[in-house]
Amino acid sequence: MELNDKTVKKMSLRKGALIYFIGIGGSSMSGLAEISLNRGYRVAGSDISISPASEKLEALGAAVHIGHSADNIDNNVDLVVYTVAISPDNPEFLKAQELCLPIVERGVFLGWIADHFEKTVAVSGVHGKTTTTSMLSNILLEAGMDPSAHIGGVIPGLESSVITGGSRFFVTEACEYHKNFLHIRPFAGIILNIEPEHLDYFKTFRNMKNAFIKFAKGIPENGYLVLCADSECALSCAKYTHANVVTYSVNDGQAPSVENADGKKVFAHFYAKDARQTHPSDDSLDSIKAGYSYNLVRNGSPVGRPELKIPGLYNVSDSLAAAAAASVLGCPDEKIVEGISTFTGAKRRFEIVGKTAKGATVISDYAHHPSEIKVTIEAAKQNAKGKVIAVFQPHTYSRALRFKNDFSKALSSADKVILTDIYAAREKDTGVISSGDLLELFLRKKLPAVLISDFDEIASEIKKDANENDTVLLLGAGTVNKIADKIVE
Image (cartoon, rainbow, N blue to C red; front, side):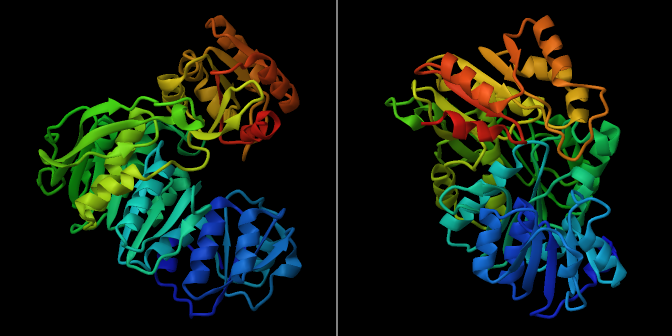
């Protein structure tokens, strides 16, 4: 019995009910499994290999099977949760159908979990979700507000993608892919930006924008819609919501002249006044990561001056979104400033992983959209003393085809580009686009690019070419980060 969102809203599981997760080791699924354990449910699941996430879940009491088998599913299971990443012939999925067990997709289950909390904050947008969700969680932790959180990346210090708190607050990433964010009914929703993405699913940008509009409409009248005023497309969602509109900007201290569906003007506007880049004081490993300080202003009045420890104005923007959401949740101003200032970034988001034998700094970043790649390279060049070498692994064939020209522009500021094979992820190679085609385009655009398929050969190239004071960026949402193990001393 595969469930949809409407039937899940009515679903009630007793404490101690057994929830089975197909693909339990994934970053999102493992987080949902841990939250389920924390809320009194029994948890079991399977994955193709052992991982730190699966080992942690076992330590917490979950039954984890390595390998997918129909024998893992029986009538003792009360609910099966799966992801769209599994194949249609997955034996556990088929067995659950055969037994007529309740089956629900991951995004729908996330919405059901969110409904257990009085005040959920859902962070949406094409870029910056993980950083903003992590930063907001850090602010609430610093304030002692005991939040729960479901994050798409690992939080340094916690070494986890989930926080299992005991309060009424829940912070979660809200992904637009497959319209998953529409299953969440948040008290506060954030839209960081809207750009063409996931068009393999949405087909047109109009369809994608309409999904964000529907997300905005789903926030209750007494809730809050937090919008980036620097993103025209995000800001345009204001007129569709009945919620209170809160805006933020790194460019303009004045609230934008927009109204919600009931004609209400902007409830609050946050601004980064006098933003200044902090300069590295030494040659330590973290000096490349020096960020910004700014005066945080709300409705024209000063809140405090955070010292953001991660680089790039795009991270300043994300910190404003986190500050705005924390404010509407009732977080004290001084704790908002403290939470921003103590945040050190999320894993694979401008993560410094070490140095090469010659002294080049190696940074891993999840950037896989042209806009993300562009600002990540700019952030690296902000403090780099030598050349910036970008190792780029395109993520999915459809994205490579759609954004090939945009990728060439985004990578143009790198001093050298090492291109590797396209990471297929959920797609099959139809032969329409290849990294060879991208290289040909890059060379026509005069980019200093080479194509190397083998990671060992890429490592050798970096060891030969990257010198002291240089920066190596490992860019992509696939496996490109594994090169770090081959080059970091």
